[in-house]
Length: 101
Image (cartoon, rainbow, N blue to C red; front, side, top):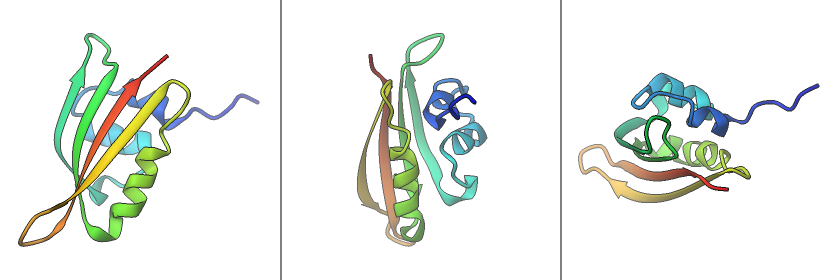
């Protein structure tokens, strides 16, 4: 039996700004966060991805955990969390996902 494919291997196979594929790759419901910005580095296949994601208080822990679970031998995920918003406060989760040898 082969080992199950990690979600991180799918992160670098998705097309830029494909929000549904991103949600599927990390195992999150698409509606549990909102992507505020998305930059990728490297062409044609990218090797680094930066995301800014707005998350409400109730979903913050699960969202951070799902993205951090993408760390593997070939993928490094780092994150920062900031309070965000005045009317409907939530959090801005800034993610840096990159391939490394």
